[in-house]
Length: 342
Ligand code: FES
Image (cartoon, rainbow, N blue to C red; front, side, top):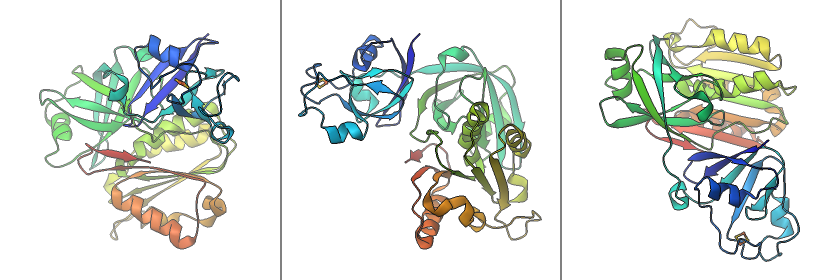
């Protein structure tokens, strides 16, 4: 038995390594040809400090206080040269992946479907060549190559980790490089390559109520998270508000209903911003975010949408005087080539 350790680098790149029982994380990383920061390898210098975001571990008592103080240890700061995992872990590494000699990881798959799911959204499905080789955290994205163009675009998985088929929600942009290729040239059976995974917008342990806010194709990473939560089960209330601009933009509502039947603590609502909408719920997601969902701030918020939506929600919370326990967000630019997570 080995533990699966996700190393999430400062630039968002993530690599997964297998750590043997009793093995130090630094040694396991080295075995996988990843050079985590280190100097003494002996618990003395503190150079290998990282933060363990999730999982259980033992640091032993062979390191000195100059390398890691008790206050740091209490904050889950770890010395990877001393850290022995006792479960799967997620470790935030305070350096870019390139500084640790992390090589780009490429994956390939074959198109099984390109569906025009709404006026503005394409659902892309890929059968993965080697599904077991692809690890990612629910909510993360990859850089998907546009065949023949020598360029890539960033998209979050809407599928869950471990599935044999990866799916993505692609915004159908007029003149868009990826959407133009998908609608004009792509065919079932075409091969696609992607690199990653990346991003610090991923699901954390659910130990308080969760609010999920999606704008347009920002629904994708939240679907991936909900698939995992539906498999795991959760007693905590989870409320999703999905906002789109026009009635014809809405997608994946059948899937949300299916998720709700598998995850009874999930509730969700969809709203449409356009004044001319025929939808029963109009307006922005903030118009439908009630006090009961925010639970006086004792909630974790996950938000994925365009930058103005992120700012609008931030201002809404400030004006209400609500400070959520955690506010995880990912902004995507209209071209979807850039993502910014926090
Ligand atoms: Fe020096 Fe870990 S490498 S304390």
